[in-house]
Image (tube, rainbow, N blue to C red; front, side, top):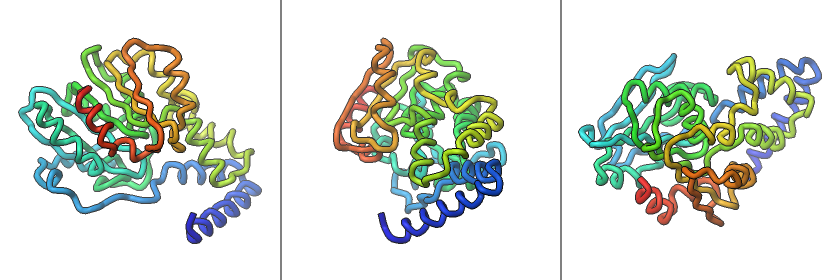
Length: 280
């Protein structure tokens, strides 16, 4: 960890200790906002693939969402969903392959990411964006989702009509929101007495407890064919969260388990790209 990052963490830890001594509720509200705030936004120069795409700028809630479309007359539709602090521009290696399979390909930067507006995002907002895209551009035949995008997609599939014929690729998805919060509290060394208030805020904002935001909870109702890629060395979305899903042996789920790719290299890996495109 670099010295500037160490100093920022030290400052944040001291800040939350001080705030919690005054008001646990206020401290938890500040912590939740920080949890929902991407601290890096990728606006890298777009590759030729994206420069050639049809741009789809849409209004969603109070956001301006930047989207892209390729092969508008394709026989099938595929939607690409990125993870936290990422952008669809990182998935260019899949676009040509999907177009060659006669897919119309759709890809959107989530709120507070890439070229979309906003400063914060949570699972409910991302889920609602997926539903908004399906309503306006669907039905969609296949999905490719990484990390936080995988959680948002699975939550949306509870409400989006879908059949066993659709195909879903989950790459290192955020299986359990509780795990992400545990990691957040651990990294910042937040006072443990903030956690009940933090969970209360989540329930107030989304009408569901923290445990509801779980791919393991949703998995039994997903009808489509699912290809699930997970690396054993992933420190952000750990393999231990995936094992309970594997143990249930859902007939529509298949798993590719790797080692040494971590959380982000896994979707860039040449073999992963090949496996995903073959599945789709």
